[in-house]
Length: 206
Image (cartoon, rainbow, N blue to C red):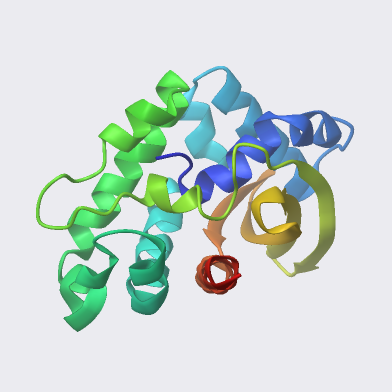
């Protein structure tokens, strides 16, 4: 039970990536600095200024519920996605995911965040899924790419995955909000889960 998919970004920033981003001023990267700083100081109000938690978690639930085969191979209970069971529970799961993020920001404890996951109906914590994407030994490598499209910006954050001797890029979408930017979505969470499922299957076969 480790990191929520959103924590893939947050923990990278709060660790080595945070010091990298400190050198950047303004723009989407500057807002990521502020979000990372809010995580370190457990300031949920400031964190929500730079991260639309409801938007991020809602998109995450949408993406996760479409990955039944990946979930089945990555964690017990993943098969419950079959038949659209999780889609019917989207409001509950989105709220639980929001609670996981809030609990982590306020306490800095991954265990506390995981405890906020639903324990009934669907025993799937988004926190546990993230450990499949980023392991405790993963490191932040840098910004793979960055582009702005009007009031939207897309940044690819590269992290290592020692378990599979490879790297992964987490793409985040940000939207301009007056004098700052706000993270609204992890755009490739579905692809990340699919990729990890393939790597895990290959590892087990070998």
